[in-house]
Length: 157
Image (tube, rainbow, N blue to C red; front, side):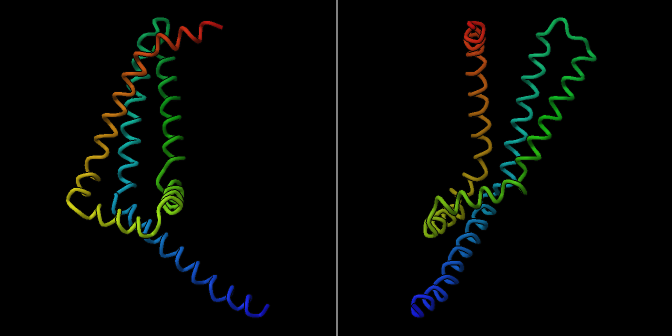
């Protein structure tokens, strides 16, 4: 029994040290990938898209007064601000760290970090927000095309 207890006391700190090292490597990787900046860029793109859609929708409402439109736009901005706050980097960083640490082995994290230090990896980091923006625009266009069908299904009740 004493041998088992001694082994646990010896091995437990080593396991914690390994986990702490892995977490540090994940945090370094996220920094290298510039995830905080990318997350902000994506949120900014989404905000622009949502506000654009909102204004287009409001323009289609013929019986809405300017005061009602301003009030609705203010509510929309408050909703976006709430979402931005709840998905801020400070609140999301632990989620990212845990997801990466749970998903990748330490050797995979090392290899991914090595890739992102290459010119191709840096290009990937730099251009990823552009790709995400293009995909979001395409998805938005597809959803706009689907709206008549969605509205028809909703009216079927």
